[in-house]
Image (cartoon, rainbow, N blue to C red; front, side, top):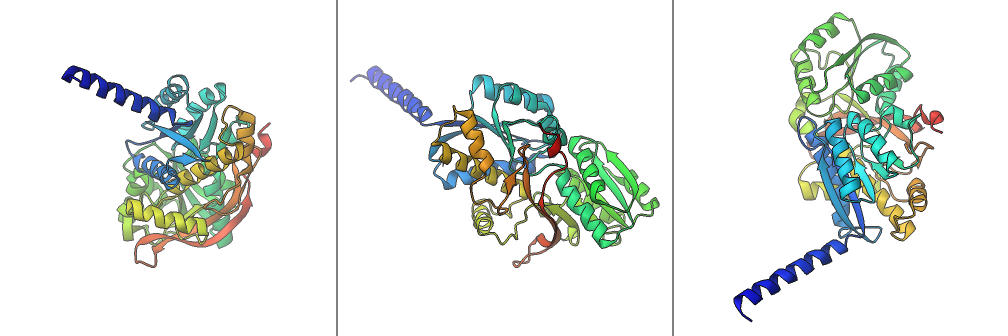
Length: 388
């Protein structure tokens, strides 16, 4: 064989190998997340959590080879729509998963629904998609946006806080969170402030807060917004003086930057890294071993969404063409979730327990989250009755 013949043979073998590898992908999943900008840590934890579940199963879910196609929406709705259209039209995916922020989720919901694509959400849970805009093709392995705030509204009422000041960025999830808090809080709202999305400076808002005479604060500032807010809250002399109740503001993506500064802050969620659930303990240990950090709820949600898909593919024998069978299998949620037992409501959102956590040191002396109560049990979102 001469040099030219040898080169042609190698090229042919490589092409055959590439084709063979592609053919092994029995199920194609498009994973959309925010992987750049101020929310990148959230999206990266989601990708890492999903990949961990996939790696533990040898690249398979439900016994099927998985090709995971990842796209960064940059926290921009139009970029998210372009990515979803690419998944649908070019990549011919069988399912779409992920989505970090609710402004993106609201934008991609229509193209997903119009194409009748099965969607497994790993974070964002906008109120409209839980109610009148619900879809039989959508399943959220996280929570409906209002829920994390609702549990803190209940907690604030139980603690007897008379006047609470509310703060959140002005976008879908921020508005949902404030509505959720007020739904369960029976005291007086001392003030309700909406900031710009990704706003870095909160000095003006904190000055207004100090003048409001509140005896507690509720804040929702995910990603880098939360780091900036907590630092400025402390610099203003408010941390430790006013009880601070938060959602997505002192989670596992922000605590590595905040450390001791956030001690004593309270957070609402359906899951924390100190969960006694055996499945959760195994996940936390595996995540820490692989990535060298405590997993956030975003990692846990994405890992759980992979387990949900795994359970559905097992039930259907890997068949994705029969969408009714696949969605019925997803709705069954027949697997060992990190949060413990839960079930889906008619709108595809979980009915589950919600806890309050305190930022505290764990057994290893690291700053993490410690569960201090479960004000809402088997809790369903407020919009399920609107889903037809």
